[in-house]
Length: 372
Image 1: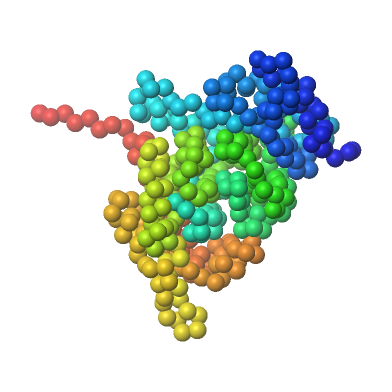
Image 2: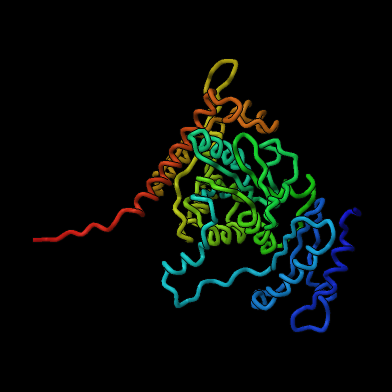
């Protein structure tokens, strides 16, 4: 069978009429850059926000047209328009529920691992937290939500391509390693391929990786969030039913300023902050055993106390951690008896305790007190 090409896709899309126009969606300039990875196809229809509802039928028609191409597997088509904000007439609690979206079948809890800026070791922390949760006997998955800079292929040492689940639903099977189920845009495109996508298209891809993947039954899905507090991060936090968020920071003031912004973002969308982790907290010299606080020390703990959120722990700056991460051999999985693995396991235990405590609190019936 001949490989799928952009020309084949554009030919099929030329038969889809643009709503309210006398031309097709290709001639109207609505089709974004088309990305093809083996049998998987991804693209977006670029529309204005007020036209999103009217364009949904065209999106479905475009998806069906491409899916009919021989040899096509997964088709991901997004609209480049944000969802409308909750109606002004809704109460704050109703607006929060509407914005947070619906639960993902089979997944009990979704935990975001975030940072106010890049370069603080968030993705490495997310992987080892997920493995720490698995070490506590939980069924765990990890979703790499960083479309522009996916890290999971490298951190987990995965080079395979996801396959269809095979149940006729067009769902993708997540890849599995070290007991984790994983999904990343890095599994779907070649390494080094630039993702020249607008924010709303990124959101469409993220929603599909979350909801059109056969995750099965999971106690917890860890989401490695993109760095920063922009539109993509805010929209994902609003549209995903998060059980809580973990903020990763380094000790220095500059990183803590950005961590503060990340915490404030989650508070604005009513996502509970489970705590702050201080990464690269200190360095212990292998030769002399002396401890060096290269980026300062204790800043994240002090910030957590100041903001009234839990402090989850300190992770040292360690050469073994860096080396194992580069090799796709996470320390928590392959050196479970090491001090580093113990640090991550302790942090994972505190995170799960916080999630469980919140869940139990929500189950408690109201207490009725009768005064005599």
